[in-house]
Length: 204
Image (tube, rainbow, N blue to C red; front, top):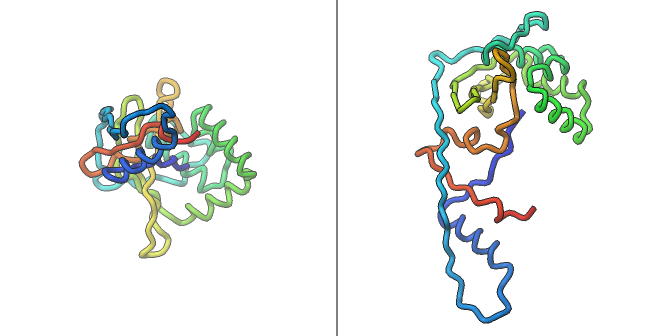
């Protein structure tokens, strides 16, 4: 699963876009020329990053009876093993109940069957290593940055984040709860500072 990437705008580009959006409507009564301003509201996202040293190779040969969710790393092993084995049901069991339901809704919208998902996973993960590079503590969540090592030398691949939370005491499951959160997209941003336009600037 992937997270939707929020729009990031900086400096002059941000100001130009805001000015255009806010100039669509004008007063009918006499008024002075507009003064374009920006209110900056800082929201802090404290988090702690640990780099795996060496990078952690995630096991992908966990059988269904051996699947466990008592630690985020074991949950990820179960998750990637389910996809490697081509088991849609086991894949869903790695997610929180609400996230599993969201995934099924996405499948319906895409008109994609369980067998089609399994075929996609087979192509993506068969014969490849999954390597965790960073562990991130973020409030009640644990985020694990990982990469799927390419099958062919020279190929590049994205490094997504797996987001996990404790669904019940001692049970860690993957979640989509942070899909609109800024930190999963920007935790590696140089300087740890990004500017995002406010929601009212977008047409809904």
